[in-house]
Amino acid sequence: MEIDARIDRRVRDETADRIVRDRAVLDPTACRTDVQDRGRYVERLLDAIAPVFSGSTPPTLYVWGPKGAGKTTLTTAIVGRLNALNGDGGRAMHTTTRTAHRQLPRVVSVDLRRVSSEFTFYRRALSSLLGPEATPSNGVSTGTLRDRLTSRLTAKPSFVVVDHVDDPMGPPLTDVVQWLSRVESGDAWVALGRTPPDGLNVDVERTVELPAYRTHTLIDVLGSRAEFGLAPDAITREQLYAIADWAHGDAHDAIAALFSAALLAESADRDRISEADVSDGIEAVPYPSSALHRVFALEESRQELLYQFLSLSASQRQSVGATAGALADADHVDLKRSTVRRMLYELADDGVLRRVEHRDPDRRYGRGRGRPPSRVEPTFPPLIFRALHSSRKS
Image (cartoon, rainbow, N blue to C red; front, top):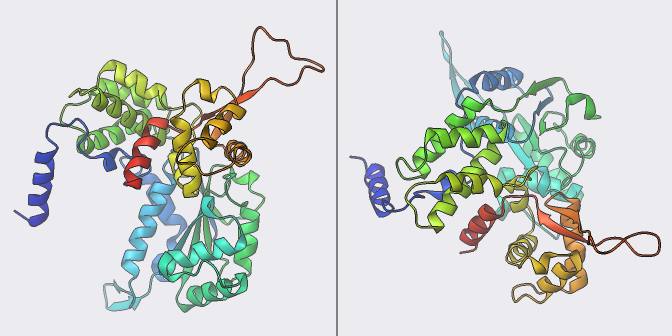
């Protein structure tokens, strides 16, 4: 028996009495390659970047589809494999007549939700190549970072993948294309987003659409996660179908509902997920929901603020003002009430929180009587965020 297998067996033995065996498998933010029957879309993506396999950069490409369709998952898997094959000395490409050393293009990946300016865009791109430790965060100009990125991109064939091009947390694609135009060899890029191509305001040479998952495919995705993340027979096929049917093709929401149901069963010390756990797990995923990836792309201070926000009582969350006051008084929040209030509104603008108007049926609002107060509520799955945030802090 191999050492890895022996260690895995010991780990399984230690978690034998738990319904949740491996939280990382159930984590919706974990990029597992849940391809299942998405192979035909993988082939379309490979066809679109076909010049890569002859050592050239691909045409500009836009990969689009709804939330939870697997755009990031499939593209990340392809990019990871290309970079693994690339290596420092080039990949030996075997033909029927001889072996030729042909260098596959190197891929640079940037999540635009983590980009707030041209400076941070170049820094994120360099970090993808060199690692965050080797990339300066201050003390250098935007032009210096641009020159460093140019030298790296021109050293060997390269192209840039920019993800979440239409997310309100990041810059528009038009700005990104302009920034790339200032970088030599920056005209080769692949963009990922939800907006249909005719709404991009940017010309692209190729497009690939990834539609939502079909229900039976989503059941297979959930079954795979349950097999490796939960105790044997912890959930039934019928329960997986109920979750997949509710999710309407959104893999993120389906996995989030499964994880939420498992956490509820775990907290009740059950060894099986009940029907009530499934219903409550689905209820714990807001609709429409914001992907947890977006929340963990926020600054740590804002993540901590959201964690404390979820700890407040219902009375403390009746209005934005009451919430800001309660958070400003919290032990782990070192911010003024006005600052907290502003941050709550900014998080609502980013779509991480949702503003809900609170109307008192005993009070009439109209001219001279002021506007009804509003409160904020999360657009992301709170049970999972609290569980993952706690584990990442420890």
